[in-house]
Length: 367
Image (cartoon, rainbow, N blue to C red):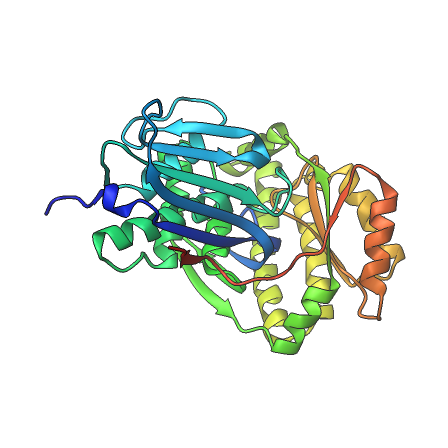
């Protein structure tokens, strides 16, 4: 069968994809090649990432392939999806474009404009890069599906594809949880093993508790971070099969995996204060994995949260220097607003976000 071709008769065809980021990832680190098997309980929140794809006629002086615009990170690239991406800041997104358009051709004189925007700051440890990949492959799959007259890919397939873009095509290290949270959304628990295999179970958070989550969550972003040295120490401790460090690291991962189950149970019961307690215990286990995974700004923000009676807090993602902390504020009226104000006043360089539970990847045909 000949591959479908995006041609002149498709000019004007446009799609939009939205995908959430994630917070409070209890069990993080156990979803990696060096930390699995394990479990992760995630909570998908928005606003996350929006990606649009529009087919148009290319001007004579344009490359006639794909123009990729990501203004949040200063990217404006011409991408040939049939060629290996040029190494550099946009290479990962170029790989995603190639994966999303795989199996389809582009006719001469036709260009696809792809634009990506994020509702959260870059480098916030909220799984944003994985969400961008899910949104990109999702929006382009929606386009190709219409041209090829086939159903769009299942969200779980897109989650796996986005993970392969990062690890296989781009050759980067990445756990699996972020892609699955972005693709499937909501609250869920992932069983990982053998890596990168995932079994996903959605958590049915009671409606009242879901609304309350949106009212009580406060996320503070400290800024981009580079904790590669600390992360390398953790990886070395885990893959070196001897020594006290290896034993401590493995015990910390076991604790994190158990806590993922506790977090899932609490969310399923709608017991947010119990969930907040699990978040606090998860941060302690993260610090046991390596003390520098809970950085100085995290500890400072935790003290602000504690002084305002917060029910719990979680260092997002792998932790380290920078990144973010999500806090479950006290349930009293106005407590979350007061906490957000206090965190904003603690350091003018911090960004305070009010993120709410969100569904997974959604792709809409605009024209």
